[in-house]
Image 1: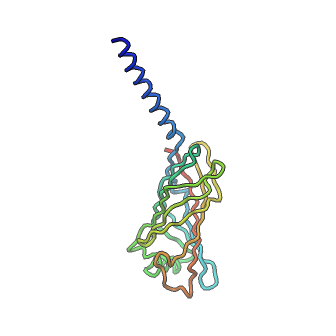
Image 2 (image 1 turned 180 degrees about the horizontal axis):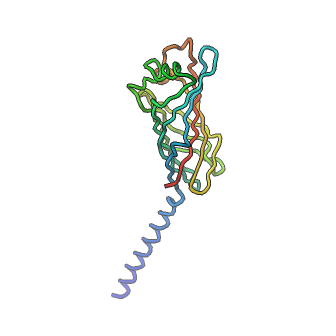
Image 3 (image 1 turned 135 degrees about the horizontal axis):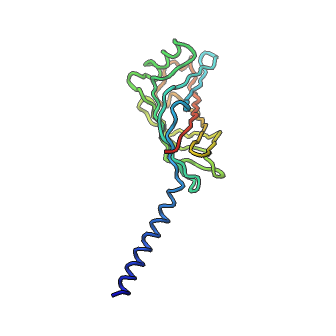
Length: 189
């Protein structure tokens, strides 16, 4: 009877030990909440020979990074109505029905289930951009990454074709190529 109890006890100890080891795989994963005051999503595009820029002032989301396992996820939701461009007329035009149509599509989302690491740091984010109700794969190239204590900062860029999201008006006047840049800082939970 004592031997049976010890065998059951050993079995329980073994299960606890395995559970602890499996749990340690997630221990290195850290989830960060984006700091809205330190997160900027911006765009650049050519229009009538000049470079037009704008930025979205309200973005929220989370980032999960696990450098040990070299994996991660990213989820950002941008308030399209928070767009600010170089002047009031440009801001109104880009927010309007010919471009972002923020009345019908108030949010832009970027979701990535895969972050590619190089030498222990994120190098590329493989995700999908949802804009005007259309979702397309858009990889982000990471140009800067700094993580210390409970804060992580990342800068990533991508080039997209606005026509891929249904923005086909004014193609003679405004470039199809749009550069997106995300500068985000997260705080660990």
